[in-house]
Length: 293
Image (cartoon, rainbow, N blue to C red; front, side):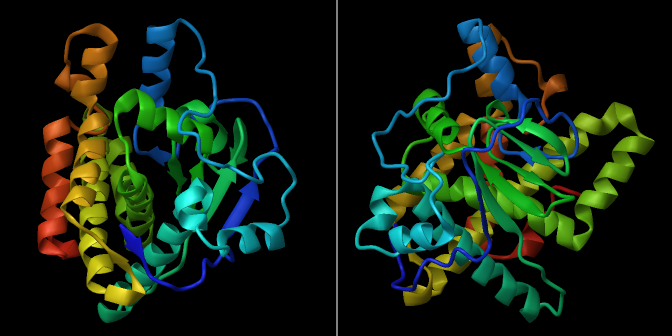
């Protein structure tokens, strides 16, 4: 994955690292792997997962009181996008915002940018207090995407979602949930879940697979921007597909208990997540993401 030469814009970033508040969000937020990750780690290790580094990358500013100006300067320094995970995620967020702003304008739809937040350990959100074990997530009331960087690295090392474009896929997936908020899909699905609680998991899977599809669409649209976006190759797409498969409900359940229970899925199987990312990537069209009826 090669980025354009534009500056990293931190205007939409909330850097909450170093701030802690206990608790675990259990309602309202939409995440790539969500509470399933907490369950997996607890069952495999017998305790709450430790939040520690795993890839050897620099995470300057985490808990160090780095100012906005320092973050901006660091992320725009030579080599920053390769060296610093947070800078790379911000750049992907910038490109996603550009892509979707233009696409919504082309469709004559109103658009609002989400915000991107980094936190350490736990954070208070409009969806409730959230712990790092939830994984990366999007909170609709805040219209904000939340990342705990050390736990993101745990996702890569323990789930096999490795590579820079695997990280980009995660950002794009969470950004997809923001699109669902903007289009009213999130509101309609939540209402449907309340009317029919027995189908709540089915609706949840449909939402997650649509976000995977939107991530695929974004990959194509961003690549088409050329020097104003990102340049992708086959290896990048392979990384994204591997990341999508790695967090399939069946893969996670197999690691936890050695058995698979489709009735309890909330995010979709590895095959489903692969299918819908690829569907979006091949079409480059939001209208192809038909998982939510």
